[in-house]
Length: 284
Image (cartoon, rainbow, N blue to C red; front, side):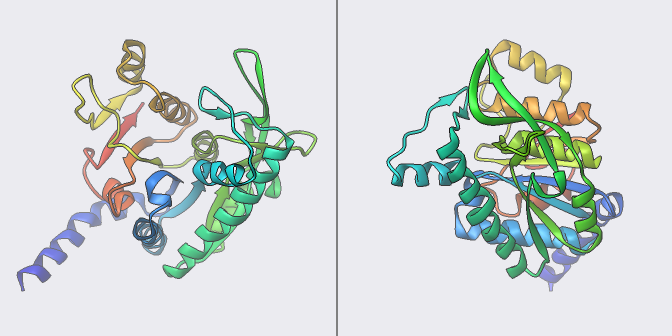
């Protein structure tokens, strides 16, 4: 009986958050360990379907760097990177479109549908969703790597209004219709801002942002985040994630989260818990 009572208590504790986020858009960037382990995949899909059924409006933007790397390796093609961005020539772009827009996107759609949801797969070229400009880093051209320049959210809004959970592959197009590889975090941030999302959640393979002693920082403001970057406390691959979060906040997203995707049901724990959550919350 006590176990049943505990279940009821958990539901009652979640009720204020359900009320608060009813009808609100939540953009989740799906990647890392949560994307490669079967049990975590099922957990993630169940989380997203539950969000939809209780009245939230989830949108998934996924990555796929390790899968692209594995496919290129089988082809005997080595990748080169600049500041974590893959230099993408025409041949590599064909692989990117095949892996991201085809295999992975289809697999995530199927995962969501097996969990009881209705999903629809999209890329940034569908409906002019994600427009990009060629990315340069310190003047270096990375080939077909794009920076989000404009988002038309109407195709996503139409899909959500029709009862679907959109699953977006981070492939954008320029003004000529040429496809470009886009960093999934950056794509998710741009899409979240265009949708006026309540939350942007980035699933990753670490606890969140750590302080100089290696302890998790539960909440940060933009000003505090910039100080930690300048001090070298936030470093490496966490810097572009936090820059993405700051840009999303500047674009109108209410709250952004970097969440440990190695925790089952991490998305639910982050949304339906207090501000400490299970990762790092970044607020304006």
